[in-house]
Amino acid sequence: MLSSKTLPQKELQALLIAQLHHHHHHHHKGFIIIDAFDEISQTGVQKDLLQIISESGVKVLVTSRPHIMNLKADAILKITAAPDDIRTFIEAQLEINDISRLRGKAPDLKDIIITGVQKKSSGIFLLAKLHMITMQDILRKGRYNKIIHALENLHDNFSKTYENVLDRIAQNPEDGSYVHWTLSWILRAYRPLSMKELQCALDITEGGTGIDHKNFMEETYIISVCQGLVVIGKESGIVSIVHETAYEWLNQNIAKTPFLSEAKLAKACLSFLDNNMEVIKQQQEYQKRDLLFTSYASNGWHEHISRMEQDDEVIQDCCALLLNSDKLQVIVKLLERYQRWREDSWDTQRWREDSWGTQRKKVLFHVCAQLGMDKVLECIIYEEESIGYGPNIKDRNGNTPLAVAVIFGNINVVRVLLDSGRIDVGSINAKKLTPLHLATQRGHREVVALLLKTEKTWAWRGGGTSVED
Image 1: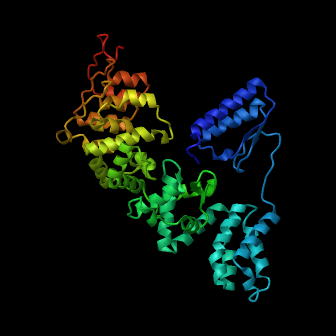
Image 2 (image 1 turned 60 degrees about the horizontal axis):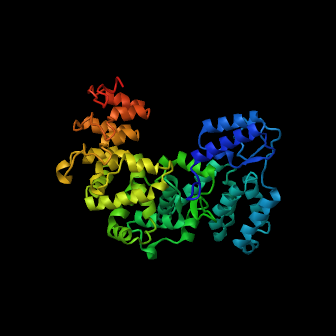
Image 3 (image 1 turned 60 degrees about the vertical axis):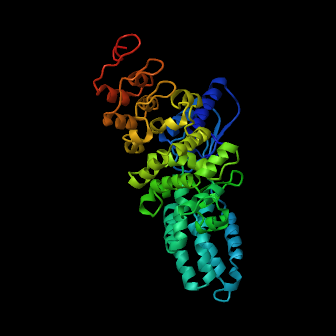
Protein backbone atom coordinates (compact mmCIF):
# COMPACT_ATOMS: atom_id res chain seq x y z
CA MET A 1 0.00 0.00 0.00
CA LEU A 2 1.11 3.54 -0.71
CA SER A 3 1.71 6.10 1.99
CA SER A 4 2.87 9.69 1.90
CA LYS A 5 6.44 8.39 2.27
CA THR A 6 6.15 5.69 -0.41
CA LEU A 7 6.85 5.94 -4.12
CA PRO A 8 4.08 4.95 -6.57
CA GLN A 9 4.42 1.31 -7.66
CA LYS A 10 5.31 2.27 -11.25
CA GLU A 11 8.32 4.24 -9.99
CA LEU A 12 9.33 1.46 -7.61
CA GLN A 13 9.21 -1.09 -10.43
CA ALA A 14 11.29 1.14 -12.71
CA LEU A 15 13.81 1.68 -9.91
CA LEU A 16 14.02 -2.07 -9.28
CA ILE A 17 14.66 -2.83 -12.96
CA ALA A 18 17.35 -0.14 -13.06
CA GLN A 19 19.04 -1.62 -9.97
CA LEU A 20 19.02 -5.11 -11.47
CA HIS A 21 20.66 -3.84 -14.67
CA HIS A 22 23.18 -1.81 -12.65
CA HIS A 23 24.22 -4.79 -10.51
CA HIS A 24 24.51 -6.97 -13.62
CA HIS A 25 26.73 -4.57 -15.59
CA HIS A 26 28.97 -3.66 -12.64
CA HIS A 27 29.33 -7.23 -11.32
CA HIS A 28 28.29 -6.38 -7.77
CA LYS A 29 28.71 -9.17 -5.21
CA GLY A 30 25.86 -8.09 -2.93
CA PHE A 31 22.31 -9.45 -2.84
CA ILE A 32 19.15 -7.66 -3.94
CA ILE A 33 16.16 -8.64 -1.79
CA ILE A 34 12.70 -8.42 -3.39
CA ASP A 35 9.92 -8.97 -0.88
CA ALA A 36 6.29 -9.74 -1.85
CA PHE A 37 7.16 -10.18 -5.53
CA ASP A 38 3.64 -11.49 -6.23
CA GLU A 39 2.17 -8.09 -5.30
CA ILE A 40 3.63 -6.39 -8.39
CA SER A 41 0.48 -5.24 -10.12
CA GLN A 42 1.29 -5.86 -13.79
CA THR A 43 1.88 -9.33 -15.18
CA GLY A 44 4.14 -7.91 -17.91
CA VAL A 45 6.41 -6.28 -15.33
CA GLN A 46 6.58 -9.55 -13.38
CA LYS A 47 7.64 -11.45 -16.51
CA ASP A 48 10.29 -8.84 -17.41
CA LEU A 49 11.74 -8.95 -13.91
CA LEU A 50 11.72 -12.76 -13.86
CA GLN A 51 13.64 -12.81 -17.14
CA ILE A 52 16.20 -10.30 -15.89
CA ILE A 53 16.62 -12.19 -12.60
CA SER A 54 16.95 -15.56 -14.35
CA GLU A 55 19.39 -14.44 -17.06
CA SER A 56 21.47 -11.67 -15.50
CA GLY A 57 23.42 -13.64 -12.92
CA VAL A 58 22.61 -11.04 -10.27
CA LYS A 59 22.26 -12.46 -6.76
CA VAL A 60 18.63 -11.98 -5.82
CA LEU A 61 16.54 -13.24 -2.91
CA VAL A 62 12.83 -13.24 -3.79
CA THR A 63 9.91 -13.84 -1.45
CA SER A 64 6.55 -14.56 -3.02
CA ARG A 65 3.35 -16.50 -2.74
CA PRO A 66 3.66 -19.85 -4.56
CA HIS A 67 1.86 -18.93 -7.79
CA ILE A 68 5.03 -17.31 -9.20
CA MET A 69 6.36 -20.50 -10.82
CA ASN A 70 8.58 -19.35 -13.72
CA LEU A 71 11.66 -18.37 -11.73
CA LYS A 72 14.83 -20.29 -12.63
CA ALA A 73 16.42 -20.31 -9.19
CA ASP A 74 19.44 -22.08 -7.72
CA ALA A 75 17.35 -22.91 -4.67
CA ILE A 76 13.68 -22.64 -3.76
CA LEU A 77 12.60 -22.86 -0.14
CA LYS A 78 8.94 -23.33 0.74
CA ILE A 79 8.13 -21.53 3.97
CA THR A 80 5.14 -22.33 6.14
CA ALA A 81 4.43 -21.64 9.77
CA ALA A 82 5.66 -24.38 12.11
CA PRO A 83 2.76 -26.49 13.46
CA ASP A 84 3.91 -25.80 17.02
CA ASP A 85 3.80 -22.04 16.40
CA ILE A 86 0.25 -22.18 15.07
CA ARG A 87 -0.76 -24.42 17.97
CA THR A 88 0.70 -21.90 20.44
CA PHE A 89 -1.26 -19.11 18.74
CA ILE A 90 -4.54 -21.08 18.91
CA GLU A 91 -3.95 -21.94 22.57
CA ALA A 92 -3.37 -18.27 23.39
CA GLN A 93 -6.62 -17.32 21.65
CA LEU A 94 -8.50 -20.00 23.56
CA GLU A 95 -7.16 -18.67 26.85
CA ILE A 96 -8.42 -15.21 25.90
CA ASN A 97 -11.85 -16.79 25.31
CA ASP A 98 -11.63 -18.60 28.69
CA ILE A 99 -11.92 -22.10 27.24
CA SER A 100 -11.43 -23.58 30.73
CA ARG A 101 -15.06 -22.86 31.62
CA LEU A 102 -16.17 -25.38 28.96
CA ARG A 103 -14.17 -28.34 30.31
CA GLY A 104 -17.17 -29.58 32.25
CA LYS A 105 -19.08 -30.09 28.99
CA ALA A 106 -16.26 -31.96 27.26
CA PRO A 107 -12.82 -32.46 28.85
CA ASP A 108 -11.16 -32.87 25.45
CA LEU A 109 -12.87 -29.85 23.82
CA LYS A 110 -9.70 -27.75 23.88
CA ASP A 111 -7.75 -30.41 21.96
CA ILE A 112 -10.65 -30.86 19.52
CA ILE A 113 -10.65 -27.12 18.74
CA ILE A 114 -6.86 -26.90 18.42
CA THR A 115 -6.74 -29.91 16.09
CA GLY A 116 -9.69 -28.68 14.01
CA VAL A 117 -8.40 -25.13 13.54
CA GLN A 118 -4.83 -26.26 12.93
CA LYS A 119 -5.92 -28.73 10.27
CA LYS A 120 -7.95 -26.10 8.40
CA SER A 121 -5.17 -23.46 8.64
CA SER A 122 -2.89 -25.19 6.09
CA GLY A 123 0.19 -23.93 7.91
CA ILE A 124 -0.85 -20.28 7.38
CA PHE A 125 -1.10 -17.94 10.35
CA LEU A 126 -3.64 -15.67 8.67
CA LEU A 127 -6.08 -18.55 8.16
CA ALA A 128 -5.63 -19.56 11.81
CA LYS A 129 -6.34 -15.97 12.87
CA LEU A 130 -9.48 -15.71 10.73
CA HIS A 131 -10.71 -19.10 11.95
CA MET A 132 -10.29 -18.08 15.59
CA ILE A 133 -12.22 -14.85 14.95
CA THR A 134 -14.96 -17.02 13.43
CA MET A 135 -15.00 -19.19 16.55
CA GLN A 136 -15.09 -16.32 19.09
CA ASP A 137 -18.86 -15.76 19.27
CA ILE A 138 -19.57 -19.50 19.15
CA LEU A 139 -17.14 -20.18 22.01
CA ARG A 140 -18.70 -17.38 24.04
CA LYS A 141 -22.12 -19.04 23.76
CA GLY A 142 -20.57 -22.34 24.80
CA ARG A 143 -22.89 -24.74 22.95
CA TYR A 144 -20.94 -27.93 22.21
CA ASN A 145 -22.85 -28.97 19.07
CA LYS A 146 -22.48 -25.47 17.58
CA ILE A 147 -18.74 -25.48 18.28
CA ILE A 148 -18.26 -28.85 16.55
CA HIS A 149 -20.43 -27.75 13.61
CA ALA A 150 -18.41 -24.53 13.23
CA LEU A 151 -15.13 -26.46 13.22
CA GLU A 152 -16.43 -28.79 10.51
CA ASN A 153 -17.41 -25.79 8.37
CA LEU A 154 -14.03 -24.05 8.48
CA HIS A 155 -12.18 -23.99 5.14
CA ASP A 156 -8.55 -24.66 4.32
CA ASN A 157 -8.34 -21.95 1.63
CA PHE A 158 -8.60 -18.17 1.58
CA SER A 159 -11.43 -17.80 -0.92
CA LYS A 160 -14.01 -19.81 1.03
CA THR A 161 -12.80 -18.33 4.31
CA TYR A 162 -13.31 -14.75 3.07
CA GLU A 163 -16.73 -15.73 1.75
CA ASN A 164 -17.62 -17.11 5.20
CA VAL A 165 -16.47 -13.89 6.87
CA LEU A 166 -18.73 -11.74 4.68
CA ASP A 167 -21.65 -14.13 5.13
CA ARG A 168 -21.23 -13.86 8.89
CA ILE A 169 -21.01 -10.06 8.70
CA ALA A 170 -24.23 -9.94 6.64
CA GLN A 171 -26.13 -11.62 9.48
CA ASN A 172 -25.92 -8.38 11.49
CA PRO A 173 -27.39 -5.64 9.23
CA GLU A 174 -26.27 -2.66 11.33
CA ASP A 175 -22.68 -3.83 11.76
CA GLY A 176 -22.73 -5.12 8.19
CA SER A 177 -23.40 -1.64 6.80
CA TYR A 178 -20.37 -0.22 8.60
CA VAL A 179 -18.20 -3.09 7.37
CA HIS A 180 -19.26 -2.57 3.76
CA TRP A 181 -18.68 1.19 4.05
CA THR A 182 -15.25 0.60 5.58
CA LEU A 183 -14.18 -1.92 2.95
CA SER A 184 -15.52 0.34 0.19
CA TRP A 185 -13.40 3.29 1.30
CA ILE A 186 -10.30 1.14 1.62
CA LEU A 187 -10.77 -0.69 -1.69
CA ARG A 188 -11.89 2.26 -3.81
CA ALA A 189 -9.81 5.07 -2.28
CA TYR A 190 -7.54 6.73 -4.84
CA ARG A 191 -4.81 6.78 -2.19
CA PRO A 192 -4.45 5.03 1.19
CA LEU A 193 -6.38 6.49 4.12
CA SER A 194 -5.22 6.95 7.68
CA MET A 195 -7.55 5.70 10.42
CA LYS A 196 -8.53 9.28 11.26
CA GLU A 197 -9.38 9.98 7.61
CA LEU A 198 -11.40 6.77 7.47
CA GLN A 199 -13.32 7.83 10.58
CA CYS A 200 -14.12 11.15 8.84
CA ALA A 201 -15.19 9.32 5.67
CA LEU A 202 -17.51 6.99 7.58
CA ASP A 203 -19.09 9.94 9.39
CA ILE A 204 -19.75 11.72 6.07
CA THR A 205 -21.15 8.50 4.57
CA GLU A 206 -23.62 8.33 7.45
CA GLY A 207 -24.71 11.95 6.85
CA GLY A 208 -22.34 13.77 9.20
CA THR A 209 -20.09 16.75 8.49
CA GLY A 210 -16.81 14.87 8.81
CA ILE A 211 -15.44 17.38 11.34
CA ASP A 212 -17.22 16.58 14.63
CA HIS A 213 -14.90 14.10 16.31
CA LYS A 214 -17.47 13.35 19.01
CA ASN A 215 -19.57 11.55 16.39
CA PHE A 216 -16.76 9.43 14.95
CA MET A 217 -16.87 5.66 15.31
CA GLU A 218 -14.24 4.24 17.63
CA GLU A 219 -11.14 2.76 16.02
CA THR A 220 -11.47 -0.46 18.02
CA TYR A 221 -15.06 -0.94 16.81
CA ILE A 222 -14.11 -0.42 13.17
CA ILE A 223 -11.34 -3.01 13.37
CA SER A 224 -13.33 -5.57 15.36
CA VAL A 225 -16.50 -5.35 13.27
CA CYS A 226 -14.48 -6.09 10.11
CA GLN A 227 -13.73 -9.57 11.48
CA GLY A 228 -10.00 -9.59 10.76
CA LEU A 229 -10.24 -8.21 7.21
CA VAL A 230 -8.83 -4.78 8.12
CA VAL A 231 -5.57 -3.80 9.83
CA ILE A 232 -3.75 -0.59 10.76
CA GLY A 233 -0.07 -0.09 9.89
CA LYS A 234 1.90 0.30 13.13
CA GLU A 235 4.25 2.96 11.77
CA SER A 236 2.20 4.57 9.00
CA GLY A 237 -1.22 4.56 10.66
CA ILE A 238 -2.62 3.58 7.25
CA VAL A 239 -5.73 1.37 7.16
CA SER A 240 -5.51 -1.52 4.72
CA ILE A 241 -6.93 -4.92 3.85
CA VAL A 242 -5.27 -7.63 5.92
CA HIS A 243 -3.59 -9.45 3.02
CA GLU A 244 -3.16 -9.30 -0.74
CA THR A 245 -5.30 -12.44 -1.11
CA ALA A 246 -8.16 -10.68 0.70
CA TYR A 247 -7.68 -7.56 -1.42
CA GLU A 248 -7.85 -9.59 -4.62
CA TRP A 249 -10.86 -11.62 -3.48
CA LEU A 250 -12.83 -8.56 -2.36
CA ASN A 251 -12.11 -6.74 -5.62
CA GLN A 252 -13.21 -9.76 -7.65
CA ASN A 253 -16.44 -10.07 -5.68
CA ILE A 254 -17.18 -6.39 -5.10
CA ALA A 255 -20.15 -6.41 -7.49
CA LYS A 256 -21.83 -9.23 -5.53
CA THR A 257 -21.92 -7.35 -2.22
CA PRO A 258 -23.53 -4.06 -1.09
CA PHE A 259 -20.35 -2.00 -1.25
CA LEU A 260 -20.46 1.73 -1.82
CA SER A 261 -20.16 2.79 -5.45
CA GLU A 262 -17.61 5.25 -6.80
CA ALA A 263 -20.53 7.68 -7.12
CA LYS A 264 -21.25 7.43 -3.37
CA LEU A 265 -17.62 8.18 -2.57
CA ALA A 266 -17.59 11.11 -5.00
CA LYS A 267 -20.77 12.46 -3.39
CA ALA A 268 -19.19 12.16 0.07
CA CYS A 269 -16.19 14.23 -1.05
CA LEU A 270 -18.42 16.86 -2.67
CA SER A 271 -20.62 17.03 0.43
CA PHE A 272 -17.62 17.51 2.69
CA LEU A 273 -16.23 20.34 0.55
CA ASP A 274 -19.60 22.06 0.12
CA ASN A 275 -20.71 21.78 3.76
CA ASN A 276 -17.37 22.98 5.11
CA MET A 277 -16.55 25.53 2.40
CA GLU A 278 -16.46 28.56 4.71
CA VAL A 279 -14.17 26.81 7.20
CA ILE A 280 -11.83 25.68 4.40
CA LYS A 281 -11.80 29.20 2.93
CA GLN A 282 -10.84 30.72 6.28
CA GLN A 283 -8.09 28.16 6.71
CA GLN A 284 -6.70 29.14 3.31
CA GLU A 285 -6.85 32.86 4.10
CA TYR A 286 -5.23 32.58 7.53
CA GLN A 287 -2.98 29.60 6.70
CA LYS A 288 -4.48 27.49 9.44
CA ARG A 289 -4.20 23.73 9.69
CA ASP A 290 -6.58 21.92 7.33
CA LEU A 291 -9.49 19.74 8.40
CA LEU A 292 -8.60 16.04 8.53
CA PHE A 293 -10.48 15.06 5.37
CA THR A 294 -9.59 18.13 3.27
CA SER A 295 -6.50 16.51 1.78
CA TYR A 296 -8.42 13.48 0.50
CA ALA A 297 -11.57 15.31 -0.60
CA SER A 298 -9.63 17.96 -2.55
CA ASN A 299 -8.79 15.36 -5.20
CA GLY A 300 -11.26 12.64 -4.26
CA TRP A 301 -14.28 14.33 -5.84
CA HIS A 302 -12.84 14.26 -9.37
CA GLU A 303 -10.97 10.96 -8.96
CA HIS A 304 -14.17 9.11 -8.05
CA ILE A 305 -16.29 10.93 -10.65
CA SER A 306 -13.85 9.91 -13.38
CA ARG A 307 -14.22 6.24 -12.35
CA MET A 308 -17.95 6.09 -11.69
CA GLU A 309 -20.81 4.99 -13.90
CA GLN A 310 -23.13 7.77 -15.04
CA ASP A 311 -24.88 9.28 -12.01
CA ASP A 312 -26.90 12.41 -12.77
CA GLU A 313 -27.32 13.39 -9.13
CA VAL A 314 -23.58 13.44 -8.47
CA ILE A 315 -22.90 15.34 -11.70
CA GLN A 316 -25.50 17.96 -10.75
CA ASP A 317 -23.96 18.32 -7.27
CA CYS A 318 -20.53 18.76 -8.83
CA CYS A 319 -21.76 21.33 -11.35
CA ALA A 320 -23.53 23.32 -8.64
CA LEU A 321 -20.28 23.49 -6.68
CA LEU A 322 -18.06 24.44 -9.62
CA LEU A 323 -20.48 26.97 -11.12
CA ASN A 324 -20.19 29.04 -7.94
CA SER A 325 -17.14 31.18 -8.73
CA ASP A 326 -16.21 31.75 -5.08
CA LYS A 327 -16.35 28.03 -4.30
CA LEU A 328 -14.49 27.25 -7.52
CA GLN A 329 -11.67 29.51 -6.37
CA VAL A 330 -11.36 27.53 -3.13
CA ILE A 331 -11.45 24.23 -5.05
CA VAL A 332 -8.68 25.37 -7.39
CA LYS A 333 -6.48 26.40 -4.47
CA LEU A 334 -6.98 22.94 -2.98
CA LEU A 335 -6.07 21.28 -6.28
CA GLU A 336 -2.89 23.35 -6.47
CA ARG A 337 -1.97 22.49 -2.89
CA TYR A 338 -2.75 18.79 -2.87
CA GLN A 339 -1.76 17.75 -6.37
CA ARG A 340 1.11 15.77 -4.80
CA TRP A 341 -1.41 13.15 -3.65
CA ARG A 342 -2.03 12.03 -7.21
CA GLU A 343 -0.50 8.59 -7.72
CA ASP A 344 0.94 9.50 -11.12
CA SER A 345 2.57 12.70 -9.74
CA TRP A 346 1.53 15.75 -11.71
CA ASP A 347 4.33 17.74 -13.24
CA THR A 348 4.12 20.96 -11.22
CA GLN A 349 5.90 23.06 -13.81
CA ARG A 350 3.67 21.84 -16.66
CA TRP A 351 0.65 22.32 -14.39
CA ARG A 352 1.53 25.99 -14.02
CA GLU A 353 2.53 26.63 -17.62
CA ASP A 354 0.00 24.59 -19.54
CA SER A 355 -3.28 25.16 -17.82
CA TRP A 356 -4.04 27.53 -14.95
CA GLY A 357 -4.61 31.18 -15.76
CA THR A 358 -3.95 33.91 -13.23
CA GLN A 359 -7.67 34.41 -12.53
CA ARG A 360 -8.82 31.34 -10.64
CA LYS A 361 -12.46 32.33 -11.03
CA LYS A 362 -12.24 31.85 -14.79
CA VAL A 363 -10.74 28.40 -15.10
CA LEU A 364 -13.86 26.25 -14.86
CA PHE A 365 -13.54 24.78 -18.36
CA HIS A 366 -9.78 24.40 -17.95
CA VAL A 367 -10.26 22.51 -14.66
CA CYS A 368 -12.62 20.06 -16.34
CA ALA A 369 -10.35 19.73 -19.36
CA GLN A 370 -7.23 18.97 -17.36
CA LEU A 371 -8.88 16.58 -14.91
CA GLY A 372 -10.67 14.65 -17.66
CA MET A 373 -14.12 15.60 -16.35
CA ASP A 374 -16.09 14.94 -19.53
CA LYS A 375 -19.35 14.14 -17.70
CA VAL A 376 -19.22 17.43 -15.80
CA LEU A 377 -18.21 19.34 -18.91
CA GLU A 378 -21.31 18.11 -20.72
CA CYS A 379 -23.35 19.68 -17.92
CA ILE A 380 -21.68 23.12 -17.88
CA ILE A 381 -20.72 23.72 -21.50
CA TYR A 382 -23.94 25.59 -22.23
CA GLU A 383 -23.78 27.79 -19.10
CA GLU A 384 -22.02 30.67 -20.87
CA GLU A 385 -24.61 33.26 -19.86
CA SER A 386 -24.62 32.34 -16.17
CA ILE A 387 -20.83 32.21 -15.73
CA GLY A 388 -19.90 35.08 -18.02
CA TYR A 389 -17.51 33.27 -20.35
CA GLY A 390 -17.59 30.36 -22.78
CA PRO A 391 -15.60 27.25 -23.66
CA ASN A 392 -13.18 29.18 -25.91
CA ILE A 393 -11.73 31.27 -23.08
CA LYS A 394 -7.91 31.22 -22.98
CA ASP A 395 -5.54 30.97 -20.03
CA ARG A 396 -2.41 33.12 -19.68
CA ASN A 397 -0.58 30.88 -22.15
CA GLY A 398 -3.33 31.26 -24.72
CA ASN A 399 -4.55 27.69 -24.31
CA THR A 400 -8.26 27.03 -24.68
CA PRO A 401 -9.94 24.19 -22.76
CA LEU A 402 -9.64 22.11 -25.95
CA ALA A 403 -5.88 22.72 -26.02
CA VAL A 404 -5.58 21.72 -22.35
CA ALA A 405 -7.58 18.52 -22.92
CA VAL A 406 -5.29 17.74 -25.87
CA ILE A 407 -2.14 18.39 -23.82
CA PHE A 408 -3.23 15.92 -21.16
CA GLY A 409 -4.58 13.39 -23.66
CA ASN A 410 -8.13 13.47 -22.26
CA ILE A 411 -9.86 12.15 -25.35
CA ASN A 412 -13.37 12.04 -23.85
CA VAL A 413 -13.14 15.74 -23.01
CA VAL A 414 -11.92 16.47 -26.54
CA ARG A 415 -14.90 14.53 -27.89
CA VAL A 416 -17.41 16.44 -25.73
CA LEU A 417 -15.95 19.81 -26.75
CA LEU A 418 -15.94 18.96 -30.46
CA ASP A 419 -19.47 17.51 -30.34
CA SER A 420 -20.79 20.71 -28.78
CA GLY A 421 -20.14 22.65 -32.00
CA ARG A 422 -19.14 25.67 -29.90
CA ILE A 423 -15.37 25.28 -30.14
CA ASP A 424 -12.83 27.21 -32.21
CA VAL A 425 -10.84 24.16 -33.29
CA GLY A 426 -8.08 26.17 -34.94
CA SER A 427 -7.40 28.55 -32.06
CA ILE A 428 -3.67 29.17 -31.50
CA ASN A 429 -1.93 29.67 -28.18
CA ALA A 430 0.86 32.08 -27.21
CA LYS A 431 3.38 29.87 -29.02
CA LYS A 432 1.25 29.91 -32.19
CA LEU A 433 0.36 26.24 -31.76
CA THR A 434 -3.06 24.79 -32.56
CA PRO A 435 -4.62 21.83 -30.71
CA LEU A 436 -3.51 19.58 -33.58
CA HIS A 437 0.09 20.72 -33.15
CA LEU A 438 -0.13 19.96 -29.44
CA ALA A 439 -1.63 16.51 -30.06
CA THR A 440 1.05 15.53 -32.58
CA GLN A 441 3.86 16.84 -30.36
CA ARG A 442 2.68 14.62 -27.52
CA GLY A 443 1.93 11.57 -29.63
CA HIS A 444 -1.79 11.41 -28.79
CA ARG A 445 -2.83 9.44 -31.88
CA GLU A 446 -6.52 9.05 -31.01
CA VAL A 447 -6.82 12.77 -30.32
CA VAL A 448 -5.10 13.57 -33.63
CA ALA A 449 -7.60 11.33 -35.45
CA LEU A 450 -10.54 13.10 -33.79
CA LEU A 451 -9.22 16.54 -34.67
CA LEU A 452 -8.58 15.58 -38.29
CA LYS A 453 -12.19 14.44 -38.64
CA THR A 454 -13.31 18.05 -38.18
CA GLU A 455 -11.80 18.84 -41.63
CA LYS A 456 -10.70 22.30 -40.51
CA THR A 457 -7.76 24.30 -41.94
CA TRP A 458 -5.06 24.75 -39.32
CA ALA A 459 -3.10 28.01 -39.62
CA TRP A 460 0.33 28.22 -38.04
CA ARG A 461 3.10 30.75 -37.74
CA GLY A 462 4.98 29.35 -40.76
CA GLY A 463 2.01 30.03 -43.00
CA GLY A 464 1.17 26.43 -43.89
CA THR A 465 -1.20 23.95 -42.31
CA SER A 466 -0.55 21.74 -39.35
CA VAL A 467 -0.95 18.64 -41.51
CA GLU A 468 1.83 19.87 -43.79
CA ASP A 469 3.87 20.78 -40.70
